[in-house]
Length: 369
Image (cartoon, rainbow, N blue to C red; front, side, top):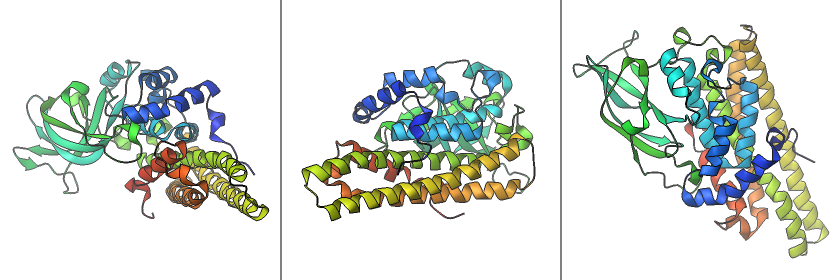
């Protein structure tokens, strides 16, 4: 049995080689390496969801999710950074057009950030006075700009929205306005450099505030009408799927070596075949269901067809969680068969195992819909 529609089909062989050969060094450096970043810039992977009118790729969601899975399969940290920074690039559909044209003209543009509203933005005559600290900004060491949510205040009092709740709006900050705080001390996704960052007494002009809402879209495209929540769920699930397939691929070689080095008998060898084939079968089924739901949901928006839109979005949320959960279960079931090499921190097996377990802690896919 094989993994159907294997992620490797989405990438050029030379790109896979470069990513894989630099992954260990990137983990040691605790950030993506210059040669990895150069490949990303050349392929415009940070610009997957940036509007075409600003020089981006503006990829269809179904194509973007498959490419994200492939990049995470090549390396978990690299795929994760691209995913999170690409998601921030999607905000280009809501930014002030002149400002968006200005920042996305940079070939090396990369937006990192946080969706947590842990900052304040006080209204002033010059714009907004920003103060705050945010966690888990993947790619923080490689970014050119940061985005972050802030609670809007005026004269020391909260500004409320039309529902009487605290008004929260996202902002864009220049790299030089931000202080990166070294805080990413976790055993997986090490090269993502997902550090904290802070902004102190920085005044931001009106053009760098935006609103994620259909009424605030600045670029007329189905991509920016599609809800960000399901876009995020699908791309994060694709990351976990890609890492799980990487682990399965490594198990194939590991199991073959184990048959020889451990002189396994026929019964033991058959058990390895059974667990590996069962893993691939379940992975194939979960991925097929996931991509069916993503494709169906995207078709609704791409063709401006409102029929069953909400039902299809719900299916994307459900299948994203099911895929992430199934991927985690499969990796954990395979792990004991891999021997001590899987527990050796310098091994590729161990890095992939650590990456998938760290990535799976993202709260968006933890609980049921």
